[in-house]
Image (spheres, rainbow, N blue to C red):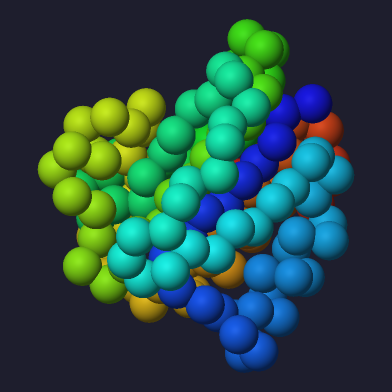
Length: 141
């Protein structure tokens, strides 16, 4: 099963946002990992090849929950071992990182706090895996 890996710059600490991330992380039935990196620098962990890297970026594509689920399902079915979702520091991602990523996604045109973006991403990963499992919770439209 494909590993869903959130990699985020900065520490979330003990906060309401951290509680939300943990709540959704516990619900995700696929392998899940959260890695916190320093605001700058820090070594990116080794990958489980093949890997897909997705950057959360204001210039990214806006996907519906169903489209996001379809993407994850397609990658899983293609044998991708790890899907990395990278949340940058406050100033975002550099041009080189954006050009090397497999996909850029955005949670709408508004700017969201980085800690809240983590919780929103964890919720969407849970929702996508629920959609793929045919769980009755998800309601579209």
